[in-house]
Image (cartoon, rainbow, N blue to C red; front, side):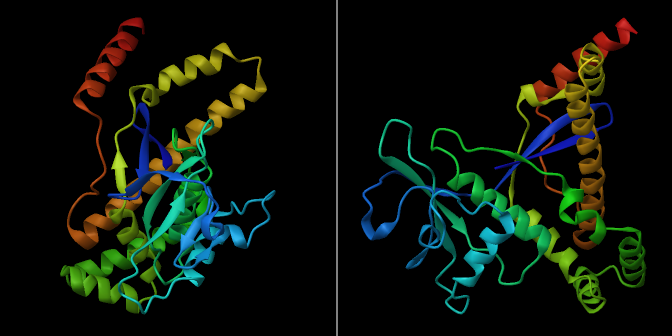
Length: 275
């Protein structure tokens, strides 16, 4: 899974991103049959563990996506998923297998990073707890693609003809197909609400930062986390604006639950009274 920290006004939250409608085969025995083991990626008769050093697993997200893409026969319409095994349980010789959708046949640096990270987090985790990785969208090339020049172009196209099909074809003809691929890929993923523990006010973060004012390590971590959340929200807004221009609707990402909204209102009221 992926955690996307977002700072919305005075609130910092995490949106959890994952593949949609994953099927899981529970408690697969690590018997060594066909040399397929825990932590492996299985694509038909090919599997990753046969190509990597057991002491140095391949963890680069783009390398993972490239390996999967190279070993898929895209001309076979019946192949629409691969198998990704978790690590074994700590006390048992069993693991879980996730049926993961195949990546697009066309490379795309942003999509490939997100896809490879999601696959990695499955194969490097135990069945009990799938790890989450914080992602900084700006660091994977997102902001370079969704820049001012791009939005000037798409606004001009939409003002000429608001028809979604016309906009898509015009963007492709103008060399902006990658942005459309990213939008479609993000719209294909699953998004979950933040846990209550992942939702906090920026003032709370500032208070903790002040408390640890003598610790450069903690100060740098908290300041960096705040900056990541702010930057990710800017990227999210860029994607949301693009989705609205192309598809005529907002992104289908979760908002805070009613319970979380009540908790935040209490916190905000408490903060205002203290001020």
